[in-house]
Image 1: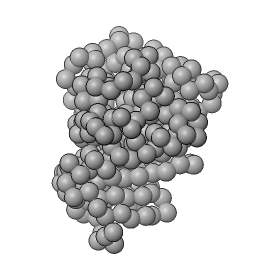
Image 2 (image 1 turned 180 degrees about the vertical axis):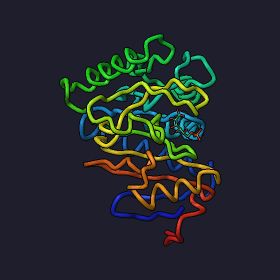
Image 3 (image 1 turned 135 degrees about the vertical axis):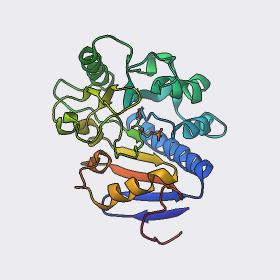
Length: 256
Ligand code: 6PG
């Protein structure tokens, strides 16, 4: 594993996708246990897409599953598609099948985005209320999650924050409904930058050669305009965990 530090982020490069999932799962356990030790609970927003599935499966297996404080964990979602929870494109569905169905987390500790509902703006406003109430923050206050997991698309999108989307400029709403014409499921719901950048810890989990170009661009220049590059916690950790294929275009770094 290669480890490198930059003023803005930490970087871990795993040998392959299996090692990536293992490193990411172990990091989640560490952040979870530290959060419970410090604040009595662990609040996390899960990433969607396909890459985190292996990490979720790893987290559901021994010994890591038993090391997680599931009874003190609250699970949210960084984004969701406009589909039912049993749909193959559902981020909740993926996380449930790979992780949540296999671990002793109380069902009322899992806060799904109702992507299937007819009124997208009502869904977003409803989830913003859910987030605020579950985290005990007052109206207008930005909820601070202990951990937000993220991925990146080859176009540089992260969560459902897509290049050129007006939601990139959102400064007040914590959750937004998004119409992403280019996406397989255009109707999306996403946490916005105020919430992402207020988190105590953000972890990118990125795999595959097709991501190498966008990873280089996102890490090289925070002003690149790429949505993933604009994730910069104001008072938190930012960790990118990549496999070698996704890191292939990065400048050579010291190995540890
Ligand atoms: C989503 C995700 C999205 C994802 C990237 C990468 O709902 O699609 O939240 O931001 O992280 O699209 O997806 P893959 O892991 O499938 O490459």
